[in-house]
Length: 367
Figure 1 (spheres, rainbow, N blue to C red):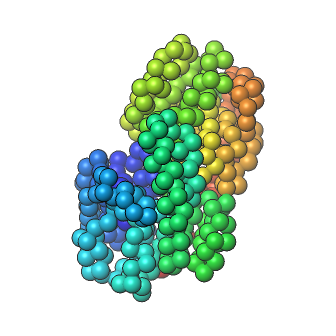
Figure 2 (tube, one colour):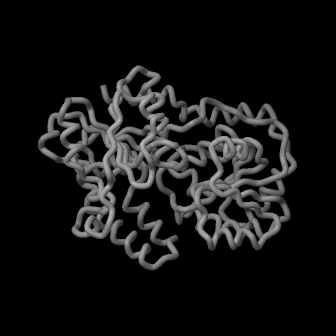
Figure 3 (cartoon, helix red, strand yellow):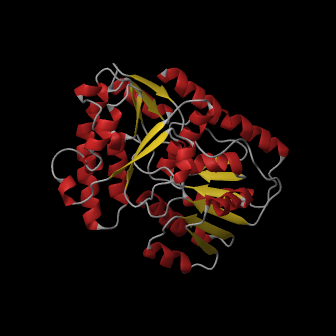
């Protein structure tokens, strides 16, 4: 059950959902996909992966904001969904906390119920509130964080929790000891290592720029790093807000690529000399990190970006916390070749994120 239509797979949450479908299909699993719509159209591409695809309208608006149930959950209630789920006895995979309102429904007591974690939602929403510039959105995010913290106990009714990083796996094991919790990294579009040797002449930051976590990161990077170097920097992502567009335009060495398609973003990632990644939120697993691990050359990131992954610094990945540290490593890497030795080192790092192996692990846990 997906919180959104998972195609096109062009932002973090739906990327995990879509590529999970792809690899379960390859493994011979029959999938009945239930997804909520709000702004994204039904996608015929999903019918190639699933036995059947169901769409339900999300009930957005102020009415869904009343009460103690989180808005993200309450707005995803559907009698039609209940009817369709009750028509069979298949295991139910709930994608993120937003889809879990039926988790404790007694009619599903004897069904295998799996919760797929993306973030510790109340922590994630609290961090979003810190980054949000609009006062009304900041209040909503803080309120939603409180409701999500209270609501999370519904996970006591799950049979299995699939967590995207090791730190959060331990959180669930400690908080919900009667529910089995296992580490299963996010699924992603990468088939294997796809690095280009040599070097190029630009730095890259990419992400969904409509999300406050990412536009706050870009704001920090511009102030502390990008405005203080002469190298060309490309900032690429979905739907950048006006204030960010204006900020980028003030610097001659910064180029904005607004809402690039999948082919364009893949080319940007593969051809960048250095990937600069930064987040104030040590939550979930950052799919932009996986993309550059599989496709990119040199990576500079802060420790929050690696939180819970077991990934550590090496000869092509550097952990930086201050602007000065980032700038120092940019100078260190900008003219270096991405050699065969660095390629082999990176292949070792990405071993835990093999989609085929993780699909097999998921199937073994569920069936």
